[in-house]
Image (cartoon, rainbow, N blue to C red; front, top):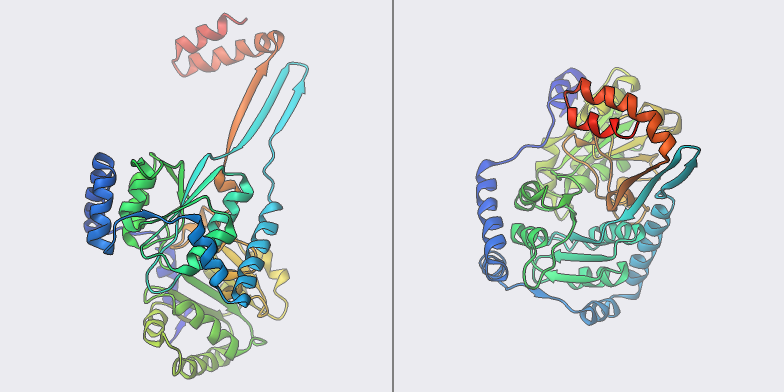
Length: 412
C-alpha cells in the first residue's frame, strides 16, 4: 500500500518506547528473586525458561568452535572485527590537563572496569551482535567483558566471542541473565554496565536495573527507512526493505519517495521477491507495520524522516552526499545503493546496536563513549580560589545554601 505523507505524519510524531506492565511485573519478580537468592534462583529460572541450568562456557570451547568453522566464515568474522576496531579507534577518547596561572583544570577519561554484553538467542545465532558490542568495549579499554547468551549457546556465537576477545561467557538468557549481571551472584560477577539488544523481557529487565548498573539504551523492534529518487533500482529497494522485514513481524521497513512510479514498481517487486523468501510470512507482517510513502519532494521526505527518527536511514539518491546535512535524527546513515543497511548489520564498521522507536532523537549508536566515564578535576591555587570565592558565595546565598557560602567565605 502506498500512503500519502499526511497519512503517516501524526503516526511518526507519536513514536516512542512502550512497556507492557504485565511483562514488567513478571520481570520484577525475577530480578528480586535473583538479587535475594543468587545462583539458586538464577538456575531455577534458567531451567524453567530455557531448559538448562546456567553454566560458564570455557574459552577452549570458544576456540574449538572457531576452529570448526568454515574457513571463509572465519575470514568474514576476522574482517568484521578488524573493520569494527579500525572504525572505533578513530573515536576521540582522550581527556585534558590544562595548567593556568590560577592552578590546574583537568578531565580524566577512564574506561569502565567490567561490562556485561547480552547476545540474544532465538531463531538466529547473532554472531554479529557479539562482535558489534564486545569489540567497541575492548577498543575503549574495558578490563573485563562478560557475555551472556541463552543456552545452548550456538557454536557461531562462541567462535565470535573468541574472535572479539571477550573475557568470559555464560550460557544464560532472559531477565535472569540481566539480574545476574546487575546484582552479581556467587558465579556471575556484578558488572558496571549492560549493553546489547534482547526481547521484551530483557528490555524490561534493563530498564528496571538502571541505576544499579548503567545501560546503553532500550531497544525496540528494528526499523529501516529509505529515501529514494527516480534513479534508484526497484529491485534493490525491495531487497533492502525485505532484509529488514525478515527480522521479525514487528520490524518497520519504510520507503519514502516523491516518485509514484518508483513506489509502484517497488510494490510489485516486493510481491515478486516474497515468493521464495524463507521468512516470507514474517516479512509480510513487518511490511504491514511499515509501508511506501509518497512525498511531494525530497525536502518533505527528509522532514518526515527526522520526525520518525529511524534506527537506519538509507539514502538511495543519485547524489546522496549533499543531502546529508538534512539528516538530524537517525541511528545510522547509509549513503547510496552501494551501501545497504545489511552491510552495516555485519561488516561495514560501525556497531549495528542503534537507537530504535524514535530514541534517535536523543541518543546515538553504541560507541566507545558508551564504555567511558569522564571525571573532572579541579586544582586551584590559593589566589584563584580567593578570587572566585566571593562570587561563588553570592551564588550560594542566592540559592539559600548558607553552608556553601560560609565554606567559600573562609577562602576569601
